[in-house]
Length: 295
Image (cartoon, rainbow, N blue to C red; front, side, top):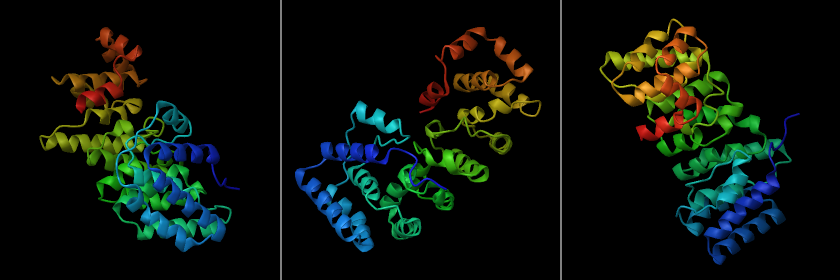
């Protein structure tokens, strides 16, 4: 039997409301509570949908402030709302108010929101994937969103979103990562990136790197993060090429890829630069430091 929720819904809901409370006026809080009371009393799907749409007109779209304590509590539940606007946060909170005991009604209602949503509403819905009830029901919708050409929607699915790594099948996950690289997203912000690395993805990304090189274009150094664990004789020449790059960021990326590899020639290559090997072991050089230098 699939779980309705896979996290402490009440604690998360209370924390989200606390953050809203710290960022809005009493008038906005009063309006949200009124909508919640009406929903609890009547259970109207129409009222739920209208409130979801109307939220931005009530809250505004300023970026929220978030305390380290609240951020840590939410992060412990794989929820990340740093940088959210007020309307997006309030919409995520509002989604948690709809009863989920009837699976069919719940899924139909949330799917209806997806179908009617504008760009900002879609970003809120996709960002809320880790919080939605019946989590196994949203994989097809997530795969559809990955194919979107709307940047804010792509960001909502790909970045700081724990849902894809937990629930997508390998083909859909690989499509997400490839789309992120093709559209030059900060892939270090993809949750589960290392855990979901796989040989098929490594092969596609290697082909992509060769296409870029053949066209005289650069390759995102983060790409080698996903090839490192699978380095063999097929990929080693690519790693050597990056290792010998005059670009120090690429050199560090090659070293990190070798550090993640069990392939003997890659380990021997890394030993040629013991200082860098020590820095990686001490986590002075990481994929996050590489990402920061790219930015």
